[in-house]
Image (cartoon, rainbow, N blue to C red; front, top):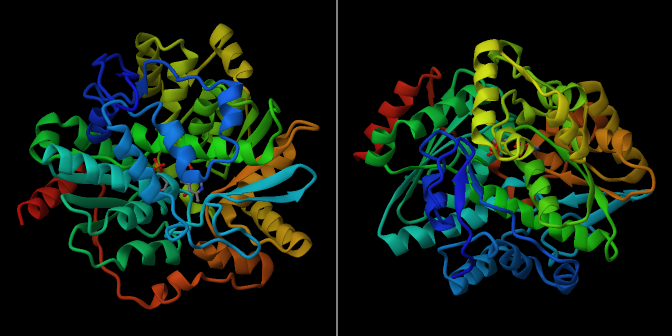
Length: 479
Ligand SMILES: Cc1ncc(COP(=O)(O)O)c(C=O)c1O
Ligand SMILES: N[C@@H](CCOP(=O)(O)O)C(=O)O
């Protein structure tokens, strides 16, 4: 077996469950998120021995530390078949196509860690393709089926659907926020005709869609009767698979023992949380820079200690739409670590938030946040346009609006003399309206997506009510 690590819930359920169990369960039964009992450690020597590994082998080395209950040979094969040049074929000019996550240096110690060369042109493919193969392996092993319920603000949806389409024993029910995604994102999801893919557009925000996913998962009778699973980053397997590229980025950019920073365009806090995990495992990370758009709940928290999620009316539609999120699920995992992994303290904070609309960390807990290495900043529409335009005109590199948010904040918050990798979370082609507004140039569309916008689309539109979604799932799993 790959490891004997056990998992517990942020809300206190201590099941001692293994990775293979929690992958299929998604959310813990007490409504919390699964976390490893402790973080596996990677020594400087081990890190050095990984320097020349191709992505698939590095993924195996990192993921085997988390993957209890999975046969090592099976895990190796899942990684080998997932991280191929063929799947991550949308590399840009100048990239080595063998390099699944190339680093492109822009200027003076700031580089892009390219994560969107996969089939849907966003970083979500990095973990989702792995998850598709892992689910298929586990379901075949256990003779089970899975009905995945997910929420997307634009990229998780298509990545999940492309990773799961045609897979045996799996259906995907994906909730997306009606009218709040780019044309390209919509076309990627709604043009799929596979019988195991169901798109539901809810008249509301990503946060409301995510609430429905959690409500359905917390209805234990429904969850068990309908074999409900998750693919959002509330599922630990997603976060663990995202940890891998921090190691890969560091190995590409840093000398032995050198601490570098990562700047991360953030919404649901899954991507930057993976960086936090990598740091806890021993990866030399000087700072983790959280970049938000106008929906700046996380920036406010890291600047003031006040966590004040906004309601739907105050969650704005922006030109980096995938980050239009006000209640970041994975923030709970970070706070769990900050409160010394005491579920009672965590539950108290969440209760204060539910009753008073916010909580504030003070004293020792706030000191721990300040010492955590996190910093944060905000980027607006005007900042985004200026960053896209400047990067294109001065450096000849076309970046997407989310990456632009990351780069703008990276430049502001980087530590002097410390290298900084900004995670490139999507390709510009997905957001052509904003790119044209910024540069006057139509971004190149990879050949693999050339016809996308002309394909017919279908989806079910409904109000954001848990009951509506349950009825829809019930109807379509009986067919
Ligand atoms: C393109 C893009 N950038 C950034 C993010 C934010 O990532 P996270 O939700 O993991 O914070 C998302 C959505 O998750 C995204 O799709
Ligand atoms: N930006 C995401 C939101 C969901 O994030 P996840 O990492 O929790 O799946 C999206 O594109 O859907």
